[in-house]
Amino acid sequence: MSPGYVTHAFRKLIAGADLPPIRLHDLRHGAASLSLAAGNDLKVVQAMLGHSSIVLTADTYTSVLPCLAHQAAEATANLVMKAARRTAKKVRRDSRKATRHYGTKKHRRPGSTRKSAHKVAP
Image (cartoon, rainbow, N blue to C red; front, side, top):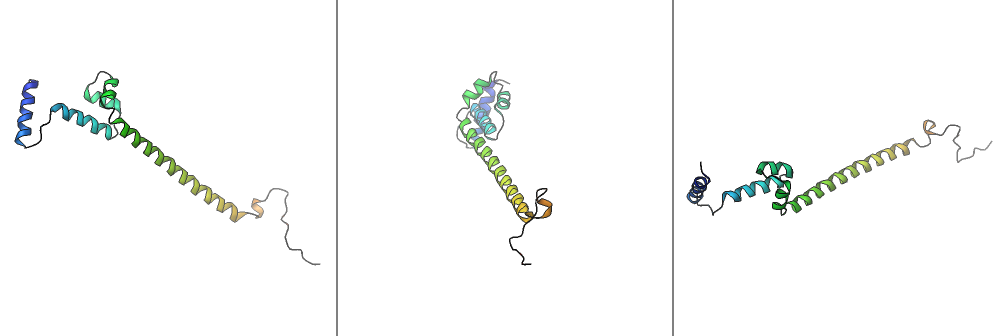
């Protein structure tokens, strides 16, 4: 099948479906952009497109990459915040446990005695 025939058949389909004019190459570019936006690695998109160099793929789709960098930064920030919340929760829980057990014999230093603040009269 010749590329000219495929292009001609595609144009007929587009016109018959009353769609705006689009080239097959535009669909290829759109598929690659959507693939990157979906989180696929640049190397995967390079292989999908059959580019010989990842530089060609990166140069062609640089307009998509800043958006992806922003999404990656947001995802990283969310992970950090989630870990911080988990850590803070654990610290509060451990702090409450330590406060509850403060002064009990079990948690006193060896050799220390508990002195009462009230003196009992003889």
